Length: 283
Ligand code: FAD
Image (cartoon, rainbow, N blue to C red; front, side):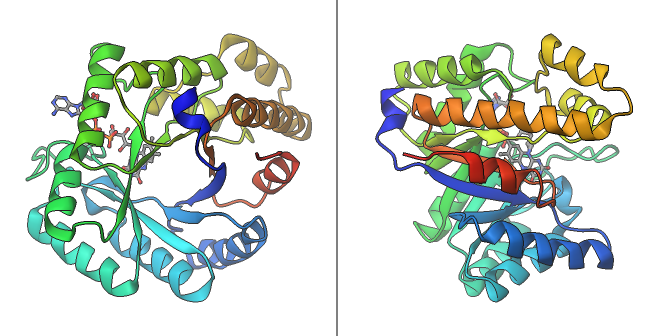
């Protein structure tokens, strides 16, 4: 963990672009409430194939222009062209955006053509070649291994390739097993990967959603956790209390082990992120 312990521990937040007017109004309140925690930046997800392009742009613009926080747009490259990425980068540069979360994304069902960028590393290379250091580039990392990687060594090889192409920092897929992160960092160190790798943290608020979402992205919900969550049945309040305790403990153990911060997938809700982050001790 030595490679990670040298960084100051930061905290950042992630939102998704709301679909409705009501969702947009709610997000403004959430941004204000979670803003009291003073995050380093607020990132906004982007639908692969450009499916949320306008809404992502609107949300990024709102944060960048109406708050004191840096907005960090996610940018997925699958299905995109150099021309469309250039246009978006021009817009972000003009808005004063300083950080981009550069991703491959997954082709939306029915879309067959991967376009001009096959992997996140192609996007990183393109941004570095055309913009130099205008944007700090965050990338995705997978302590439990990306579902499409043949094995964890192949996964780490391609992760290193993203770093070699110019990634400045990484955010992980969420996980509930501290060891998966610690072993991943050890492996990164063996491969001379030397960038901050910030654990992505998923709050637990709903059993069905968590299981569905985790199956979709390849994150493991350990059996003990599944069993406990399942046993709450319709008692949502008790499930959420327990979920909060689990995620507080996970986050604090990661910080105590020397993780360079935590990145919260807020799911556009103030709670439980607010209470969890308030409870944490950062170095
Ligand atoms: P890559 O790093 O390109 O890797 C994808 C797969 O290809 C991996 O299995 C890798 O091992 C392999 N690979 C990489 N390079 C090569 C190569 N040159 N040759 C052969 N194989 C290679 N999705 C969205 O749609 N929108 C979002 O806003 C979004 N935000 C995310 C934020 C975070 C922090 C994380 C962890 C994920 C996010 N995702 C998002 C999901 C992400 O798009 C998917 O996990 C996607 O499947 C992989 O994206 P990537 O950038 O990790 O891809």
